[in-house]
Amino acid sequence: MTGKIFRSIMTVVIIVIIASFTIVMGILYQYFSEIQENQLREELHGIAIATEQLGTSYLENLNNDKYRITWIRQDGSVIFDNQIATKELDNHLKRKEIQEAIISGTGHSMRYSSTLTESTLYEAVKLNDGSILRLSISRASILVLVLGMMQPFFVVMVIAIILSIFLSRRMAKRVVAPINNLALDTTIENEVYEELAPFYQYIKNQQHQIQAQIRSLRQKQEEFDQITGNMREALVILDKSNCIVSINPAGKSLFNTDKSCIGEDVSAIDRSFLMHRAVDEAVKAGRASFSSDMGFKKYHFDLSRIDANGKRRGLVILGYDITEQSNAEKNRKEFTANVSHELKTPLQSIIGASELLKNDMVEESDVPRFLGHIHNEAERLVKLIDDIIRLSQIDENTNMEWENISLKKVSYEVKNYLADIAKKKNISVIIEGDEGTVYGVYRLIYEIIYNLCENAIKYNNEDGNVHIFITCNGEEVKFQISDNGIGISPEDQEKVFERFYRADKSHSKKIGGTGLGLSIVKHAVLYHSGKISLQSRLGEGTVIDILFPQRNLEIDRD
Image (cartoon, rainbow, N blue to C red):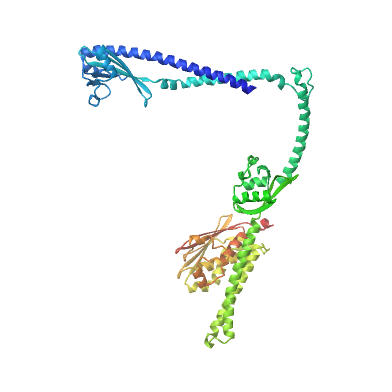
């Protein structure tokens, strides 16, 4: 009712305003046009008298930018123009106002420019010598005048709209006030609209029933929200149209959405083909499942159809994080494959050499060389097994003995142990900086420094340098080892800490190694809650930084 009253008043107001605006614009335009024509004629009369007396000199000294003044000979050529050079003007003899002035002594015309949206008014007078003097002025078109009046027009319209809103609301309130003032929780006798009493009694009964149902539903909803709100799994419930009915906090976090998705199609939270296919399959078959990468994690989704009375009522989507299981399975397969390959290589070499010795196919002089080869491969096999066991201990977070360890002291121990290897390539190992005492597992700290220092020597050039620098800032201990060796390519830098990965396959095969050294370093650093970073350039060398927290970690580990 209020809307109808408002629309009626607004229609009348708009029609009146538009009609008034149109009439006023017509009257104003006609009024100003007549004033402008009269002023132009009077100005032309005065200039014509002065021109006949003083000639061109008067026109040249006349400072009047309001009008355009043009003096024309009887043949139509221009004698003077105060805005355009006379040589640029064509003959004016055929202009309407000129023709009228020649015939009757005065002439008048108006020409419209669609590009400038304005008209030009011309007034001409014939002088005593037969020449024509013409004045012209631009006149704004009715469109320009309308545009100029738009602001006051809109002000009037806004005021009218405000008044109409006020009046419509006031009128509507008077009409519906008796209905709005009725209270359903009290008796409705002796009311204004007595004929509506049965209707309101029915509404009152319905209201009590609805309130009871709402209380029951609210209680059930609170219980449901409490249960699903504490779930780690993502739960999404769809209706029979595949629109979202409910989504728990874990689901909102997983799909990066909020409650605004309620009522939207399931594609509002997941547009992937896998989800679309699984929904279709669950609708048809009753169940469906799939796994998908969500950001940096992997999730598995189970979809189940909800049936009631033999009809489909909706779908339930349950998603849970399987990142750890997936990564564990992937790492297990990769590790098993790599271990099998790495163990197989030295074993095949040992078996091949031993078979040759067993079948007396080796010259007596070559026997020591073959035995040495078997011994070296056996040592390599033992070292590989030791590295695998050490990695397994770190992965399983095996309890190990913790103590205060000096990084500088361990560095000197490693330097002395690798002295022979460094001497063969004439590589100098320099240790500088603070003592660098950290709380950790001695065997793992030794492995970190040993593997880094061994790699820095093995992958260095002849007469190279290895520089170890240790600094403390009160909160962290920084262990830095740098060399001027062969370096690591950018594409290999992110992979060198992976198990069994070798950046330079040919060089690694030549100098040996299990491919687990840097992987042990990385996991040992993480075991001590440290951070490791690498910078390297081919042909220039490598710099590795390790940051250890300088605090007693025994409290954190407990």
